[in-house]
Length: 200
Image 1 (cartoon, rainbow, N blue to C red):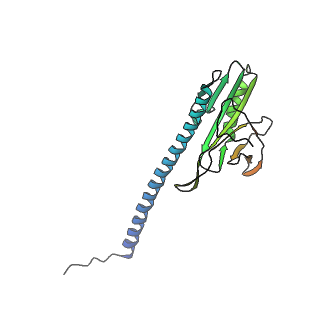
Image 2: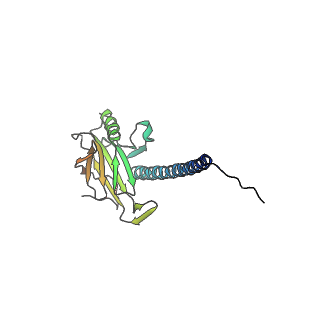
Image 3: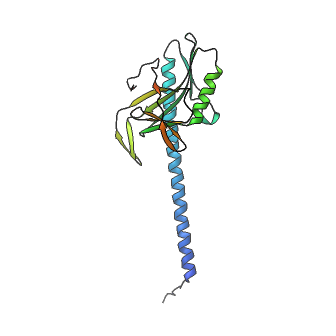
């Protein structure tokens, strides 16, 4: 007759604790991997949008545009120049599947710093380029179709520098101290054509 091993209450409690620890560890690993995947997807979207804008500028005879690098190096996403027209743009490009896209205040500051350094150019502007993709995120891994939209807003240097948000309808507002505040930015007519550009 097989022997029956009796476990104490403490042993049973330790067993449950170890099992919960293992489960929590697996959840953390899975969550970390999911977050990495989401971050890679967002970076890829951002790169594709920047690359599209650079190609549009470079398809024009008088314009030259460059991607300047990642956000970690404190540079604008794109620098575009037209020497014949003495024009320079620094551009922050945002794209996504949500209903809003946000440009943090520090990214606006770095764009302004760059445009202000190039004093020889008569026209110097900070452009916020927003692209709302043709699929709208409605849940984790769930999307619905919608119209692809692009908005190009020129930053008003008379405004207090804050986080700037653009909605899918093209309305802009500021976020300061966690509260939503009025911020009206004008649409800018870019030198290239886009069938997805919306002007409000």
